[in-house]
Structure formats: structure tokens, C-alpha cells
Length: 113
Length: 117
Image (cartoon, rainbow over all chains, first blue to last red; front, side, top):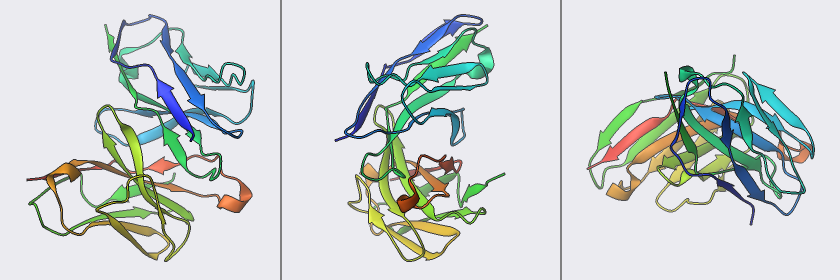
């Protein structure tokens, strides 16, 4: 079945460092791909998404490119801030039910000043 | 702004109690979802609903049931709470219908942290 694999955390960075959080997926169809972020004490909110191969999603300085050839959707940011500290979830829409989301296990990011 | 609210942020119950978790959304969304979030496991889908009185099992429905009597409200029920149901429960809603092709954004509530003693 469809699945998402994310790098394990926590990822610990100093402010202004470059961030990459790896995400790869397995899907039988052509899913949409998502990154959600969960700030401490809150629910998840959509960070960015891409709906087809080679699309790049971007928001708040974060970006990710839908790579069909490597089945990846890695999250990147050029210069992280302390306020980016959160848990990041990669997700895909199900092949048979596109309204269902399949989530990775989440990656905690800690940014120190 | 879409708003999804959950009845409690924190809840403590005893083993064997019947527990109701309520979720309300204010954007007339057709689809609603209940997930549980556990460290190292991410989010796992318990149940979802396409419309009033309609429900579908997710990946881990055992020990849970749901009720959707009104479009804006989706309730998760633990008939007899057990300690392994201690978790964070997240509700979400989504606008599109399955036949139209999803790919839309799910909007999440703040979560209910349930502890079963």
C-alpha cells in the first residue's frame, strides 16, 4: 500500500543554518504531496503542497519539489529561525481515495539561537 | 478562516469509562476525519466521514466508533476506554468530495490529549 518515510529526528540546527528534511514515498497512483507543520501545543497546519511531478511547493521560505523519478519530496529552507522549531509531517493523498492522507512519522526540528 | 474546534484540550478518564470527543467545523465541509497521534508513529486515521450519517473505517478503528448527525459535527466515541487509548486525538475537515478528486487541504483542530488511567 501507499506509504511515506521521513528521516528521524530530532534535527538540531543553529539559527540561519540550512535545513533539509528528507521524505520519500511509495504510491501506486499519482498522489499529491504535502508538508504539514505542528507548532508546540497546536494542531497541524498545511505548510506547502505539490500536486504533480516537478511541481515545487513553497511557503514561508520553505520549499519542496515533487520528484517522481526518485519518489521524493524533501523539505528545504535556506536559513532557519528559532520560530521554525516544530514537528514537520510529510504526507501524500491516497491512490484509491484521494481525500485520505497518509502521513509520515514526523520530524522534530529544534533551532537554537 | 476555517475553524475546527475540539471540545477539550486535555481529558483524563478511567479504564472502562465511555468517552466522547467532539469536533465542530464552521466551513460546511463534507469530509471529516479523526486521527490519533503517537510518538514515532505519526498520525493514524481512525475513522472518516463523507457526509451526514456516513462513516468509513480508517486504519485503526478497533475500540472506537463515530457519529455524524449534523454536517458540522463529528464525534469520536470510546465505548470502554483502555490505557492503550491514551494519546493525542486530532480532528480534521476537508471540503472536496471524493468523486471530484481530493488533493485539498485538511484543516486540523488543536487536538485533545486523552489520558486513560
